[in-house]
Length: 119
Picture: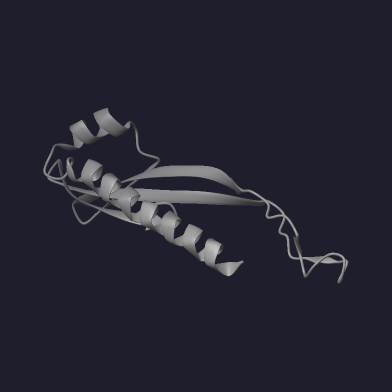
């Protein structure tokens, strides 16, 4: 029963790498552009912070996913053992990615990603 689960996990993780590349490609377009362009495209940030002449704009991206349940499986032929094992209930998972842009001189200098849903 484990090889299909490992295969599924490998497929999911491969898709995550692709998501990270897409996210970074989108965010890279803002580096070197005016802060105004960033706010026009992404909207008002969730949080801002200023220190040492630099400004930081934080944007949050979150969603809730439900991992479907896994049904119980027979521990052996039902006519021999007669019982079942395993099975897992559905799970609710909160996925969050915070993107923080560093602004200096009115221009986007860089960004950082934090969270379990950044890619």
